[in-house]
Image 1 (tube, one colour):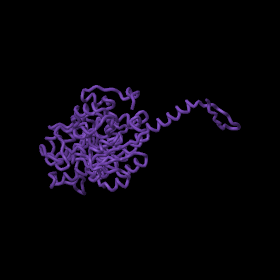
Image 2 (cartoon, rainbow, N blue to C red; image 1 turned 180 degrees about the vertical axis):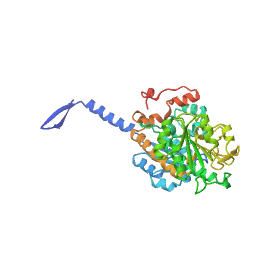
Image 3 (cartoon, helix red, strand yellow; image 1 turned 30 degrees about the vertical axis):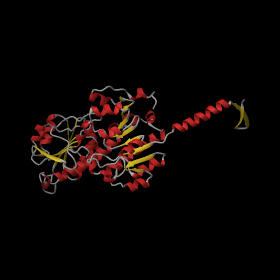
Image 4 (cartoon, one colour; image 1 turned 90 degrees about the horizontal axis):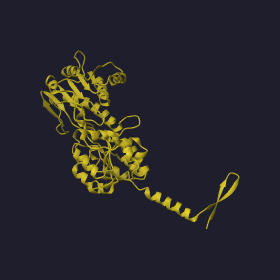
Length: 414
């Protein structure tokens, strides 16, 4: 039996016949689509490491996610060290949980700053989405194998790359780290911190301090800008001449620059009061450019700040330190090698990270899951494990593991 349905078009009515079976199928299809549009639950566990004070989602962004149809569950006091109270999250529409396991059990998407520790990995379940930093300098093959075997779709801050080639979270943290490095250097140069007892910048009649920055990327730019503002003499070394030229143009002033040849590096290091390691190679461990012999030739009380320690460090004498014990002295040189330097200013850093993650999570919410990678290049670039495969060739190369391009998994059932 056919049903007649009138449709109005300009100037006339037209009758069309619709089969009841087709009508039924259409209704079932519509219902099925609605069912497939599941609610995304975003879980924010409290960071386990005492060294990590940041939180990935602020109350303002949590409210944005809730207003767009997501549920947000956050562990008790997850934002406390960054200056955000449970009350603020609750008022934003988030659910406060006093159980870390509950956060992991209920969430489709887990968002952290640090990668999960081994206890937290146990809480992860099949087909969850994990978004966190990787910290390549301390990453192990065991972590990657476990995440892969558990069938986790893992997204790393270090690999989130936009269409313009930028790495938004890393660039934002690099900006903070560059500025922070100069503040730290100024403090460590004082006599009560074991330094030379001098100002970072000069004053009338007194020569300024000399700061050498190895790396002309985002960290180098903001470190150089801050050092120049304080009156220091600044030298910048990088392997790419175009980066050095770009740095000069952005700073609007002529600074000493050199390419990363051992001779130039040694000359600059020996003559400096402060050296800052700011080399960053996306997806790679940082090359060691400053040898122990160079460090030994620096004047006693000089300062070495290795911001690249997150990726393995670029000073041969570097070793990771903590916020509680941030420095050590070797060959008379004060070393500062805290991996997550941006965590010194957790409130500012958390807002910066949350602004970026908020837009990424909105894409996942609106698409209903990880299928969004078909339309979002930044998320696609960020994925390093998916469907029990390593999908990032840099990681696969570092650890000698098999790799499958994420594009080849597009036909899978997301």
